Structures are given as structure tokens and as C-alpha cells.
Length: 142
Image (cartoon, rainbow, N blue to C red):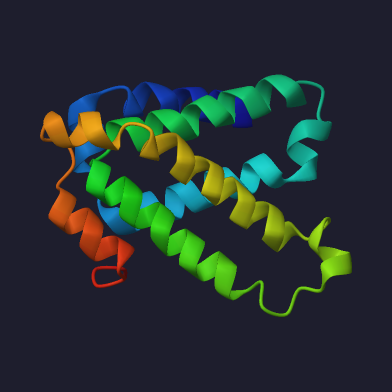
């Protein structure tokens, strides 16, 4: 069932008009939940686990690629800010297996992926650098 839901979301976020209409708060909740599903051990433990993880990976990238680019960056920066703040009390011994560390790593991977297209996004008018810089400096993070 989860695989079917992911495929429906993939189809919805393939429609630019729909993806661009998603509000930042809803996008943040959706991306966070998708990333948590990717880290959930029961996701990969099921019979179709490997395929589901692959589908969820593609879905997350489709969501980040087709929604408002500034909102995508904002969401990832907020998630990074929140998750890294929770790492203060994680010891070195538990860091390797900590779900909080894994979540932060996954958020960073998403940021690296979308960062690769910053230049093209600005040139195409899909990303506004002033807003991005304000997000990076924490002025627009919600």
C-alpha cells in the first residue's frame, strides 16, 4: 500500500501546477515524513522493501525538483536546523546508530542534491537568490 501511495504522490508532483501550489508548511511536513519513511527499518524489511526505498528516494527528489525552489531550500534548511539542534546531546558512541544523526545526514544529502542546480535555477528564474540568502542566514526560516 505504501508503494502505491508513493506512486500516486509521484504522479501528483510530476504535474508542475500542483507541485508549485503546495504551501511551504505542507511541503515541510511531507518531506520530513518521506525522509522518516526512508530511515524506517520496517520500510526496507518488507518483501518489496528495496523497491519501496528506491521509489521513496525518487519521490523525494521529484518533490524537491518540482516545487517552488525557494520553498524546497527553505524546508531543507529548517529541517537541518531542527535536526542538528537535537544532536547536541548525542555522544560519539551513539552517533553511528542514532536515528537523529541519520536523519540529519539524509537532509544534508538532499541539500547537496538540490544545491547542484542552484546556478541553473537562478538563471531560469526558478530560484531567487535574495530569498535563498535570507534563508541561509536564518531570516526567513519558520
